[in-house]
Image (tube, rainbow, N blue to C red):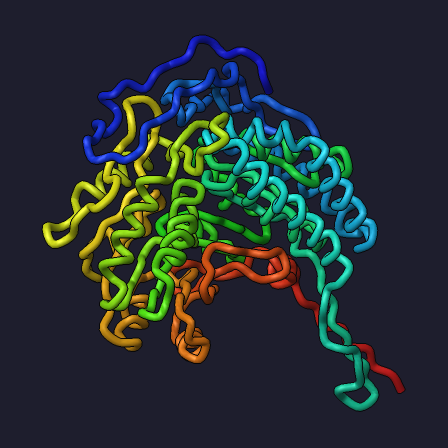
Length: 509
């Protein structure tokens, strides 16, 4: 994986949005990055070159310079991986839940032992602050894998019984088969485990395609897992949208799991439709944050900012849309602006940094455009543009005075940007919160517990926090409503998504 791959290829400033004068962060001096590396697919327990022979350039988001390359897998590569997964399925599906559990626990232990390597791989591709990845991503990822190792032994179903005279019925939960999985670039390692763990715990095998820009930690995960699982149980093919399309449309996979944009989810659903494949779609969000007039504004602003700027806002449940009561609106805007100005942006080695760069030039361009094109009635009160001239860094931003119909309100920003608008009544707050096509997450901030519980059933989101935002646990489900998709990650509900139900009826005299 770490062979040298020629000289670095630089993305010039002509390819990027220009630097802004409206910034509140000075970028710390960047440290030297890893040597260029050549990534390969991982199929049937071994690293393999792509038969297609085409490669994409891997870019360091801290510098905009090339650090290596990865395969652009095509039909022959996908077919090889799927065939390996199909062979492995005949063995893995017959493995007892207890044996599957023990194997996954050993994988979790190995991930923990090799955490530094995983952190290196994750930071190389994403530019995230290293201490954040260690504390907030790798540790929870290991815990989530251990949860599913235990859940493998606790599949639920209706009790066997005589529901018809002289007949005994029982329900079996069985694995669905080979699963095709496509993960995003915002949490490469964590999203891979969110998909792999329930699928493997249920007895399935997997071909997974990581995002084109962030394959390294997923490949290392597959390499580690291969030491404890039958060969071919976990396979990774790298590539672009065409690679993903080849995987989704291959006739063998029985289930397709995709995390990404709504547009991407529609494409996946359309591609999988002709073969009636089962779908598991997590398509992003645009979380509403309802703030009432009985809160401690400074305390709330600190927590909203943390939930908005974590992972540079590249989180489908980021606290993006703040909807505030008039009595606290001015003070909340001021406090959020202060939080934005004091949120440190830095490179992986910066132990004080909270935000890293955006992942890629396309995302930098998109976030820059959304902010630049806000209507005249909205105002940038903090941040508002790119930091520096190298890499894809963007200043934590606050925009007030937005209206419900504005593009920056209706679209998932997926960057370090908070919008703030007002509501006049509880009913209007709910209307504004629900008035987007997404339905993944929301939060309510109030000291009035009765009010909060009154609002919870009215908010059309798969997760609603009260006086909290962004916190997840392995035992509880994560997934949305409306255009945010269907199916659940985490919890026993995710495990059930990777099973099929069989009714068995036995007649007796």
